[in-house]
Length: 120
Image (tube, rainbow, N blue to C red; front, side, top):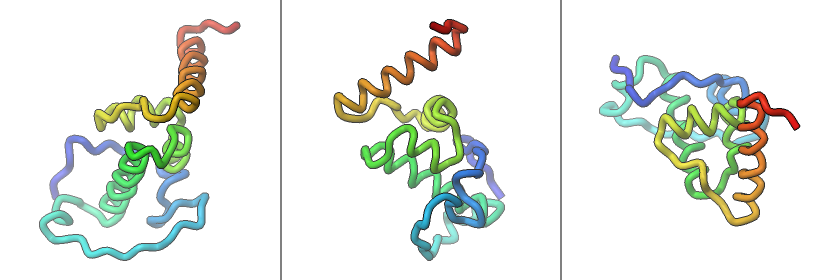
């Protein structure tokens, strides 16, 4: 079975557990995956994880999820979601209205200060 170069293993602590998010009462969905797509995945769990991650990425891009919500759904830290998850997918983390952008800017300033070892 073929592996995707854009795929990256992300923790599933807050994301998939048996194919469903642990922390929410989401809806179960059954879909038929064409063989032309499913042959590229070595396990059903890998396919489920990819679909789940793609859904989170798409909803973030549409503005339906914040950085924090996306991170929580995938069991990632804010920084892991922003840098690794979105970065690997070449998705801009700048997404939102002016108030949301101001809040994100403040969070990123704190993160940069911590990363540079500057504590006020």
